[in-house]
Image (cartoon, rainbow, N blue to C red; front, top):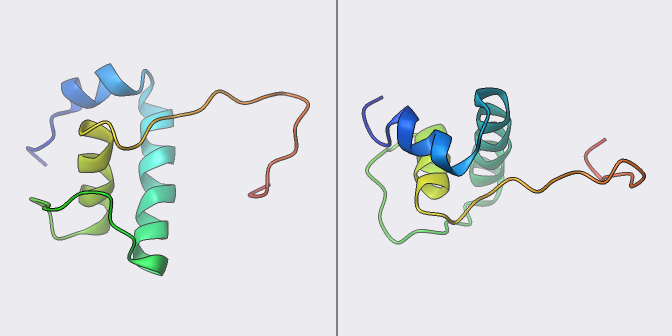
Length: 73
């Protein structure tokens, strides 16, 4: 994958593990709901679209609260 580059994505989310996790969850959400955040995408695949949204600043990673129970757990 050439766009967006891993270097530009690492400026948005600081660890590769977190980047993969956020992109995978968003790709599944895109596949299930079809709710797009950008007008145009260079990629045709859901993971590529999720990475483009991260690059555009539409997605970010939220810090977890250790005491809170999240709905996806």
